[in-house]
Amino acid sequence: MIYRVLEITEKLQQDCCKVVKASVGNANASGFALQEWLNKYGFVMFVAEENNNISGFILGHQNYDMSCLQSLFVDKKCQRHGIGTALLKAYEEYSVGRGVNRIVFLPPVSEQAKKFCLKNGYLMISTGRLFRKTL
Ligand SMILES: CC(C)(COP(=O)(O)OP(=O)(O)OC[C@H]1O[C@@H](n2cnc3c(N)ncnc32)[C@H](O)[C@@H]1OP(=O)(O)O)[C@@H](O)C(=O)NCCC(=O)NCCS
Image (cartoon, rainbow, N blue to C red; front, side, top):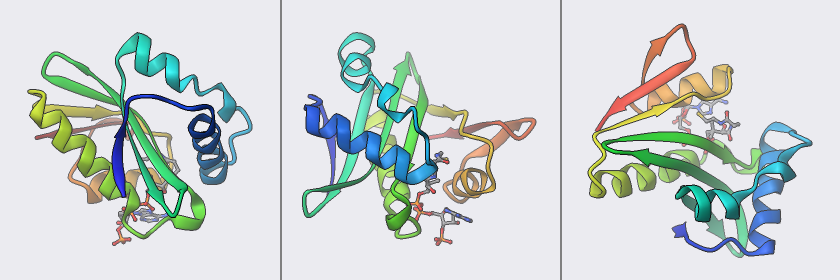
């Protein structure tokens, strides 16, 4: 199930940190100040949840008619089952409904991220780092 998050509970914060760690092994994942990003900066967030387990999340923010994707993580155990794509679709659909006509994303430099972006219709627009999709 994919749903939009408005309120970050302590448990959700911890679960999302676990997803980051499980997806990229980032020891600093606890530095993800999700509640602050949602409240203070107006970020939009969706999570993927199955049987009470968070398997992934996506986070970004809108600037006029453009949206900037900040983060997309799927737990390694759950990867290659379409969860990343489903999260991205939910985010894109929500964004279109808010008047967004393009999304930009600066993902981590990795073959995995690059292939995922290209598969989802994003075009690489500068030196292999920045991706963009017109909605
Ligand atoms: C990138 C990431 C979000 C993809 O999540 P996911 O749920 O595995 O993605 P999906 O199952 O929806 O994959 C969609 C397509 O992306 C491509 N893809 C995803 N992971 C890939 C990998 N490891 N190697 C090659 N292609 C890959 C494939 O084309 C895949 O389609 P297919 O499985 O039918 O071949 C996940 O691997 C992740 O969290 N990575 C670490 C964090 C990161 O890089 N975030 C930036 C995201 S761009």
